[in-house]
Picture 1 (cartoon, rainbow, N blue to C red):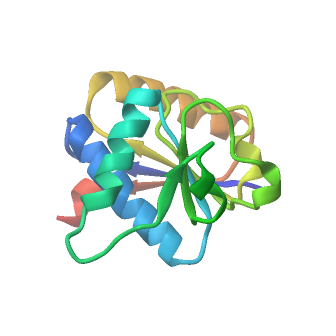
Picture 2: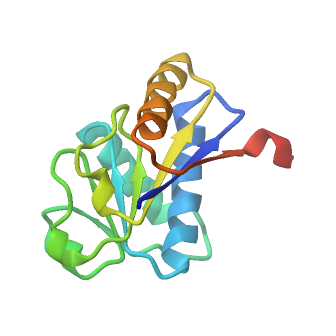
Length: 147
């Protein structure tokens, strides 16, 4: 059964959420998982693609947009509409979309990032309730307590 982790940030900005998404993507990929970042829309996908290129000065996280030639060879893909090809065996999903994609259960792990922006809080609370109602194991990681 898919395991779901919610990462709760103390910040309110989209920048903080995307910065954390980059760090979390690096951690997940570093553990050997193939990862897909499901973005809200093309604007977010393009912004996150650029951010992944330079979020760290001393490292690079190989990634590509779904549909590009590179998407078949990198451990991290980004998209906003269709899921990655099931034959690609992607184990983890980082969901940055307000809603849960219908195809989330094909992944071993799902990560959701909540910041203190009211729209994100509202939509992700609904996601939390949906996962719980369907019987998925959900774990919260309150990052404000790690400071």
